[in-house]
Image 1 (cartoon, rainbow, N blue to C red):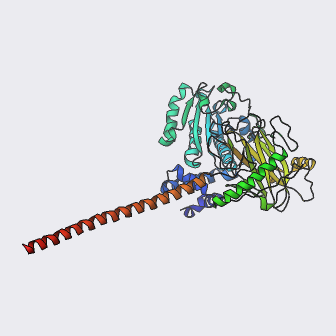
Image 2 (spheres, rainbow, N blue to C red; image 1 turned 120 degrees about the vertical axis):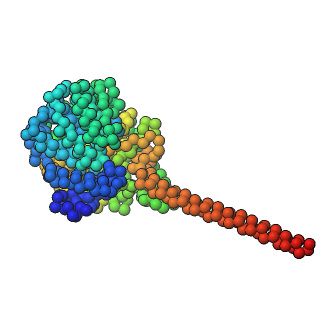
Image 3 (cartoon, helix red, strand yellow; image 1 turned 90 degrees about the vertical axis):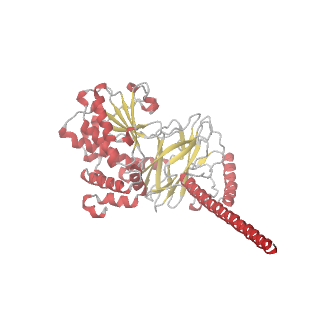
Length: 496
């Protein structure tokens, strides 16, 4: 189907479709697993992507004034941990001459985020405070809606509309018709009194009843404002630090014992060998044979990162306050890395700025600081770049290296936080021991569920066979009784 129309598509999109199962799955989900409708959506979205040169949309390819305007940007997260895509309607003016460029700005932001966070859905916020009839631009609103309904599958969680003027009620009745019945439920009309049902105050500006002091400005391009976390390399002297070297060694020993038991009882689980921590140094060097495998791994060009997407922390009730990130250097050179977070006051990361030798793995311990609790809005950014073999790996050399390395040579990978309320998480969580064994994730649960269904099916078949044999036995017994009775009857008649 796609090959017949290959001239209408960007070859990069076709290649991605053939390799990215998640992308295909999102198209199917968005079209309710109806293959014909899915193919139609792929066809339309691919043609649109080529027409708008989506794969080539970069910051430098668009006029600077579009970014300076501040009507569209990404910032913050809703209560479910989804990124917020803001449309500040009061900064938008209807101008047919600029319409195409503004539409390309929407496509730029959506593609920028889709590639960066691997297709994780967005929440769209229409901030309509201080707007009037002069700001109504149904063509532009329809384009934004169609991006989610037709071009970016399974990419929308909800549309939060803040303080819509009554004069626009008729206009949004038209918008509801564009959304279709499935997406209408995603519309959330709010005001200052109830908007925090969907977005917490820390990501709402004061005019929406929040406490977010963020002010849009350009340049640079608005990002997640990642900052250096607490407790860089070196001794940790915070008041809640209670892990002595002896405790760490004891925990590591317990981990080894636990691993042996797990290996005996769970053949499917990846073995995790005991790791010895180097003394009086912030840089932990670990040989490849000691590298632990998480259930998910992001395979980047410089580093493999486990877990791939989420760090699992416990709530205040469960008390799990530590996670482990495993970095594996897959290059032939030293790779420098640093870790940043959107909530530097909450976390300490050790090491947060170091390097990894070729072919080795290294552990990063992320722990909550003091009485803080993790939230779905928290993010971590891992930055990595290759170093020359002649370069040193000390703190001064690393500081100078990060000042000089071109951004184009820096690999970036983002991790989000997941709060586990009651059950154990699926990533590497550190609580009872330093390196806790990964619990079952969704994939494991799916495998187990499939296995249980198969067992259930076999039991049903056995029950059906038993019922069949039981029925056959009853029939045979009845026949036997009938034959015996008939024989008695014949014998009796002959004697008579």
